[in-house]
Amino acid sequence: MSFLELTRMRRSVRDYRPDPVEAEKLNYILECGRYAPSACNFQPWVFVVVKDEEVRWRLGKGYPKPWFVKAPLVLAVCIDHSRAWVKRNGKSYAAVDAAVAMDHMTLAAAEQGIGTCWIGAFNEQSVREALELPENIEPIVLTPLGYAADEPTEKTRKPQEDVVRWEHF
Image (cartoon, rainbow, N blue to C red; front, side, top):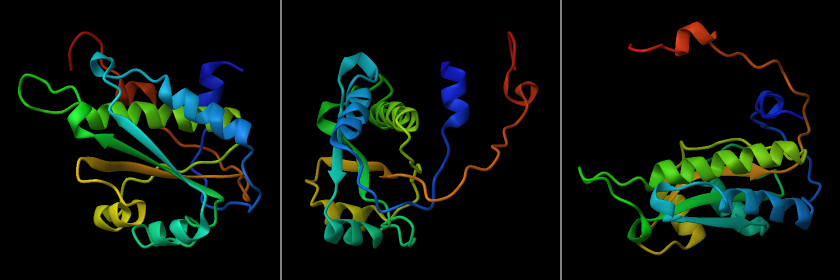
């Protein structure tokens, strides 16, 4: 499969079967995230894998959608601010690094037949409490991981001419 085919195949899944994700597939997904590039190779991410149903329900308080806790796993990509590269203007690159790692993992999951859904609109304090995160660790993005219970629908994307500029804006 080409990379373009993989990116077209990846989709946001909002209905999951209860079937467990095999350890080999989960490890593969995590390794793909671990090998993601990061600014100055600082790798400021921390991946928190949540299998326990009670912890998933606590996470669900931070993102109260019934389908979210239905997946057998939830993955939280967090950043450690003390390990992040910071630009000269003072802006941390950690959230960008976390996004790149999550993107690698969602694509790896799609390749393995595992569904994901990128979630950034969660209550940070609820997620912090559910994961018992230390002060210097910030949750950036969550995704359920599991086998899709629904069928894919056609993806819509803007045409290339709407999003690409050549030489200048």
